[in-house]
Length: 434
Image (spheres, helix red, strand yellow):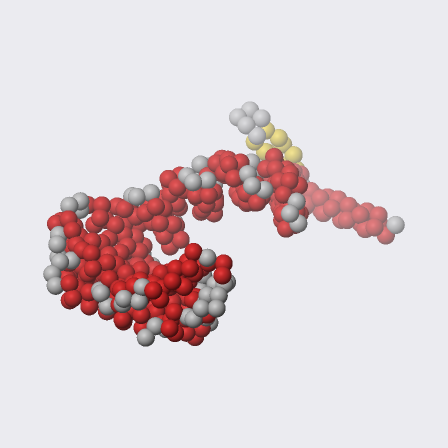
């Protein structure tokens, strides 16, 4: 009731104000609306009419912009509902993936894509879901539409590169990484593109990616090692004959004295050119740089004993020194192998007595190292013992050893000397020899 009275009061005030203006401006006035159209009335009436028309015009303009605001707000609310719906589906799909229900998760992501074909997140997640389900090709196909569109992102390209690499398509993987580098160069993309180019044998491209990494300031021990490795690969690719290869490798080895492949290759080249002393020096450097890897010392021994010429005693002494270095650089079962190799080298150097001394300590060495000698090492030990005794003129005393080789089931392989030479009721040949 009070509200109706207020409305009546406001209406009365408006009518009173209109009458007051009209009566206060009762003089006649002419309002021209066109060349021939004009209106003659009280000036107050004209004033009120102009005011009302202005209010109507302002109301129409306000209504127009208000309606536009309403439409915009409605669109924003719809977008917010869509985002919330996508978030809910996102959480649901991720939960299904975590539970291992990949087929159900795939259905959820496909439901999202049916409403939004360009949803990058949904495509990436769907590809990961398909990959977890073992369908790599389908996972890659899902990314293709986004990967080639303007809405593609670094994540999509990295995913496509990863999938292509797993499928063995290294060239396609590198092309995807090249797109990342073209739009937004970063360390990960450059390193992966470099490594893929190296695997494909495109050393020039790999070096270009490496130089771009360095220009961007991505420096570390790994990048330095990669540059050395790629430079070496470029040398091998460009140089084909021994002379030109040696010409390029000598300064390279001088600059990178710890790079083992270059030392090995230059040693091989020097051997082919007849520079055996230099080749042996390079192999020794390679062995030391590798931390005393026995196989590299074995190469040195083979070089002195089989490839070089000159005084045999000098060559043999150098080979024995290399074999001793190999033994000193190892531990455990490898130390036992190295000692057997030393004994073999001593035999080749016609130093049978020294070889016997080494062989007599092998079993004790295995016990100190707390290792069990496998059957092949046991057999090698017995053979070398027999050969040493034969060269020392103790042919008759080698009988139990040869019997041990013929009947290896007489005792199980062991780290102790008894298992090596034990025979049924016969004395040990090690203990029976003078």
